[in-house]
Amino acid sequence: MTKRQISDWRFPFKRSNHPVCVHHGRTRVLYKLKHCEEGVKEGTELYEYLEADQCKCQLCSSSDTSCEGLRYKHGREALGFRINF
Image 1 (cartoon, rainbow, N blue to C red):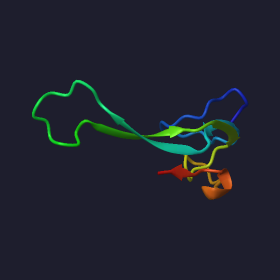
Image 2 (tube, rainbow, N blue to C red):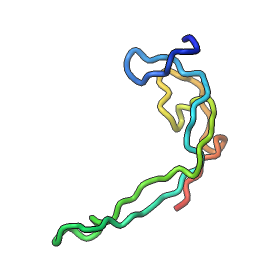
Image 3 (cartoon, rainbow, N blue to C red):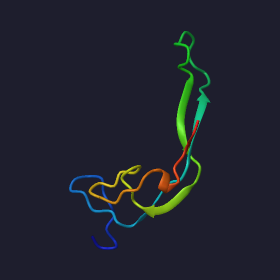
Image 4 (cartoon, one colour):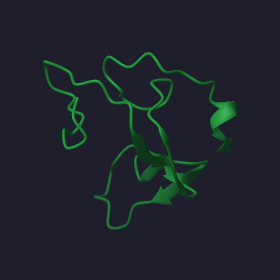
């Protein structure tokens, strides 16, 4: 892969061995949707998602990012990932 090629998730996969920007630390967020229709099931108005605390440049790690064809792996803890509940 030359320096100008961009890693691609579609077939045929290109090997990604350059630094990428990924989320570094995540926080679980619960949001209450407004203006829901009357009569909806209780709890339907709640939407839960993970929000990135910050970004970090690192080699692509298939343990938490889609790095098709890449065999470079780290444990989540080594990358500084944490989930706050």
